Image (cartoon, rainbow, N blue to C red; front, side, top):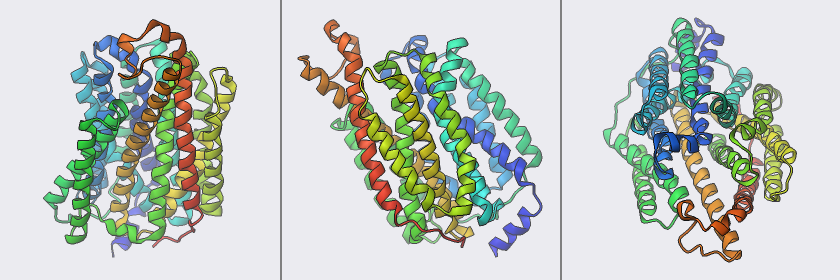
Length: 488
């Protein structure tokens, strides 16, 4: 019944303008998630805060996305497509404007929270709209455009932000973003009509509370682990609270009539496999986007502008590859893209683990280009194939699961990458005879250590890439069980 109603609704709308407005808004949101990574040193100077404080601009953004992700499935069933679109773009635009005008750290942090709230609504809305607007035989091409956003936007963040900061100031990152978001809001307001069925299920307050505590604590714990280490009492406490809350949350979803996040979607085997693959690939993507700008600057001595320009070719390749991979998926299915893609990812990660301080930048650029091409081959086909198996009534829950795990994957991947970087760097310096019992404190660094810092950073990054290569191998094994499915 719901499927037939949605079919009648989609016959009355033009898909292209809707998709363009959604893609524009999501692109800026995902771009904002990584754009500040390269600007954090400059922001620390201008806002007069330390590294622990400034990190909240990215950690807080991720926290809001993770907390609101599970709620998005409920919102998709309570509000019309048009209402959610206008709300999400309004939040994102307002947040960007406030951030551009922020006089201090506190105002900028609040602005980041507002930005993240807009993206948290928009990502599942975009995925749900694609599932409704496009039939399975054409869905891959549309999902390829979404894949473009998921890879190109975070990959372009450091590059574009580096160029903006070099020529203007960090405020322009947000002023440019707010302009594009406003254009997207106008386009969507003109063309967007409701394309989903509003069912307004009962809201389970306990599930909502458990979800907020569980995902919020887990994300905070993993984010803090990358900074404070895994033995930190606060880190362990938040991770433990998050795990316990999510265990109770899972039990609750199977015991209520209207679950906040319907976990029965995992009864569909290809969806379950897709979730695992998508999570691993997002871990690899977001951790790589964190490590590579740092490697170029701290390890190889490049400035902000040089690092941004060196990452540009890979960014352009990911933009070209996304839609192309979508068309190949429609024609050949998932396995012929995912398996070669994961093999390439694993090979690139292990080649990254062999770099030294004397490695040419051309080699690193070539690896970066290959990595983003391979990620495009694996990410979109995995996500699309899994969503294709779900019946229409489970689309909101499937999109909520994918959106939430995207943030959890980012937090876990980034935390593990930073932990391995710090461990490797400390081990290298300890082997050089330096006392590392109190860790690497840049405020009280031994002057004799300075000449060893670039080499120690490169050594630490190598360990993180070895781990990433192992994760790619695990994903490759899982991908052999992937089969093409027809939409339910």
